Length: 166
Image 1 (cartoon, rainbow, N blue to C red):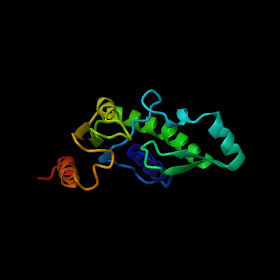
Image 2: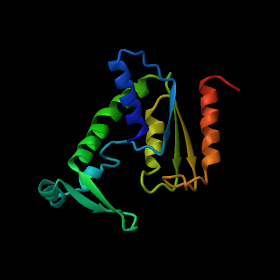
Image 3: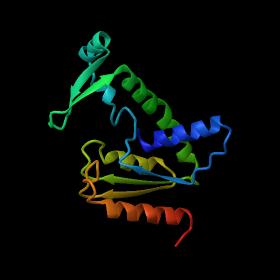
Image 4: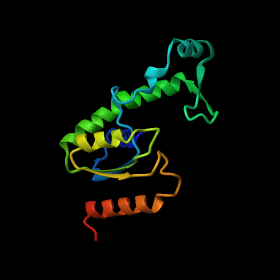
């Protein structure tokens, strides 16, 4: 789930529990901006996969990275994905477009082949109080720990600026 979905789920649960929800900021690491015109993985599953799911309760897909991994996709997986992409992200984005008091930092790898860096640029356009840091040579997993120091430095600097610490 993207950070926006996680933030939305936490806020919704706290509201249901009667708690005051005040979020000053959050960090988005390589998050997907879920809108159909950018990326909708559900659109690539066809009738064959749906028929297999009806028969066996799941279907399998092979990793697009050519590493031989096979993933089992269940109806529950697809339902959960639909709920995240359709319900939560737009609600959070509408709030963040209006509420410039909530600050967001997005860190994204320019070489990300899982979630295109264009998603980060879209967040930057859509969120009122947004900071963007693109790591030129990083992939989706930020090349393991290769860029860990840079990421930590960005996050610490961001939090210090949010909480007015020097």
